[in-house]
Amino acid sequence: MTNPPVNNEQPVAADDAGVASPQEQLVEDELLVEDVSIDGMCGVY
Amino acid sequence: MSFDVRGAWALDDRVALRHESFGALAYHFGTRRLSFLKHPQLVRVVEALADHPCAADALRAAGVPAEREAAMTTALGTLAGTGMIVPREELVA
Image 1 (cartoon, each protein chain N blue to C red):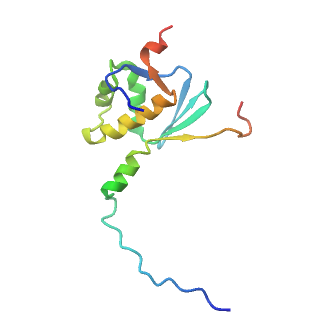
Image 2: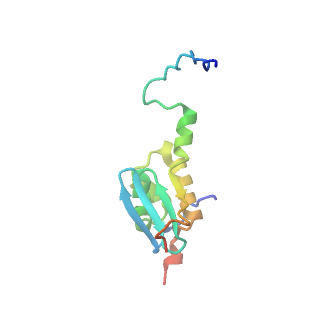
Image 3: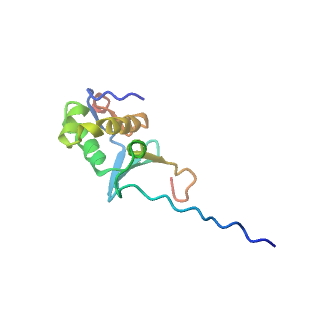
């Protein structure tokens, strides 16, 4: 039985903490409203 | 859905807002839809809609910076599309 390959990849250093890339900021901005489906949940009338 | 920021809007009478640390939960008793408003400033905008002649004024009153207006407008469009907010003339009995 062979051991699974070890992932030796170095973690990517994060950019300045707290600074989102423009694309990340755009994605974050698009999620200001999130609909949640509660159909089928017990106790919902 | 494009949102008319020049229109008069208000939270539907059948919607209850529950304030949370992240913003608020909005539940529509008519459609039984549940939405997360994921930014406290968006909640302030939604609550201010009924007090201003148009949504654009509500955005300004809530202190929404220009760079965030597009995201807020998109969010308001989503809320309008799900019936959470409605054109104010629809609320007149």
